[in-house]
Length: 190
Image (cartoon, rainbow, N blue to C red; front, side):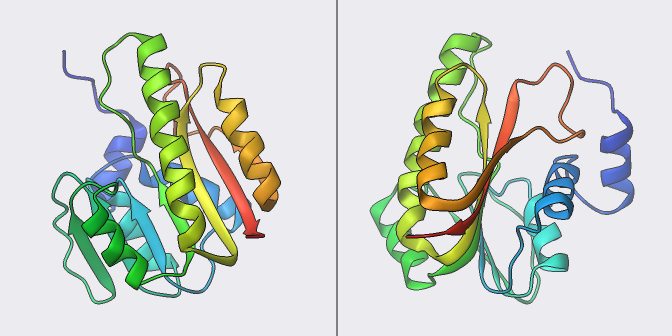
């Protein structure tokens, strides 16, 4: 069943963004100022809304990574198609590090079973956190989407220990029925 377009979807399309998710990042950035001066890494970049937002609002180059292709050609943007956990791709990302901001709107393939989906999200986010630490500049920021299911608090506590500030935030642009939230961590202490 195709979901009916809502206000955010129509607004995104009218502004030239491929998806409504741009308004989640916009709200996060307005509230927490996550786009610091320097390189940005957008993990799970498809279909490209977050990368486009970063190109307009970040003060540095933007790197996007996704399994699916993203068709953005703009100065200051580098897209790499592939699995972020592939050692060769990680080596390429490491060569452009450190990043002042790492963003991830990535989600696992979902099954419709909330227990399974939250467990997959937990595993994905845990892997992204550990992958991100050596790539972040001291004082850098990390934004991650995670599905709520109970155990995500353990991941959040890991961020609390490694950043000056960390919050759990659900943007208004998230659908009411969605069980996604975002970890917003600022000031990486190393």
